[in-house]
Image (cartoon, rainbow, N blue to C red; front, side, top):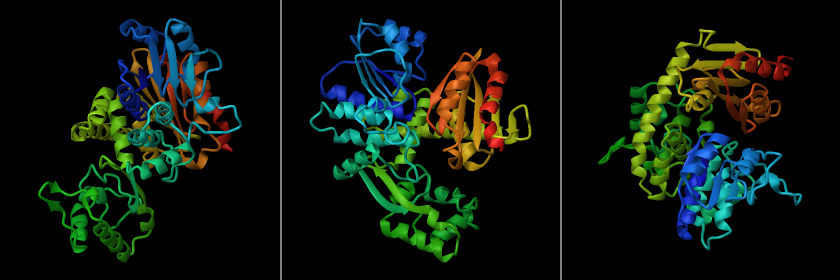
Length: 434
């Protein structure tokens, strides 16, 4: 089995692993960051299996998969990305291939994990325990828009609720619901800015004590997930009484998985495992339900993100590192930022306002002669800029490969084609000048 190494790919692999175990099929798991002729050949040489099952990868490389594997082995692809025009495989499940008049958006309504779930669901008598991972994969692929799921993802959510696989409730939407202490989660809240609390640990502690919240228990510092519903309401009322503007933005739907993690945080954890080149660690944690082992990975990833964001902030006025353009920002990271993490840095920098949009493009050295490209577009411009098409065309024009989703896409290009690639991007986005 071959899966992509990001959150959605890992989620799809978890679904497929559990599914294949339940039907007593032996298999070997491989994770890849991209699918090329060389990597397919390498997989076939190392793994002599009669069936090759691709999850969250393969549709965009159907021509390569078809030509490299041929008729020697059976090929199954469960994916949601754009489908290559050429090439035939034995079994191909993808919303883009539906031709009965029903339209399902593979970029917003179902992820690779969701498609893999449908494959498993068509065989298993009870696939309910796999539902959370279909939703985690969708969350990792930024398909939860305005904090809501839609299309097939919405159907998965409703089924997961019915089976008690996820709890959907109203509450405080603070990042770090499970992974940070309550003090840290509230202290680092910047939207809205809470005068006397934001970036003020003593002020945060005093506020929580004044609302009657116990900050510690026998296990140490309490997190938001440790609070009762009544305690959470006390915090909300306390913030409202202080008269903070925009507090309503902190209130909303919270999705808590049956493993105790909030869905956004859990998707970040799986994504971290991929970026740290430990996707099999994530797989083991989830398949064996050993969630306590996730904390060390999350801490390691957090340290790396902090390091790279600090580098970026120090380099904001260095135009050889950060180029401010008419369409947004180019981050020319070179070898200063891990290419596996440039996408995360680009996302955080865009959302936090460290760099300016509408479009932010990050570039980091992937190999000696290659650059990893990662791009993001802010929501206000998602109708004007289709990033997956832009990246696919621009990368291909300079001899590389690109693709992704409408609001988050990337690719890999020859290092010596960087300047020509930048010119192509600028020419393609010249309408944003107007």
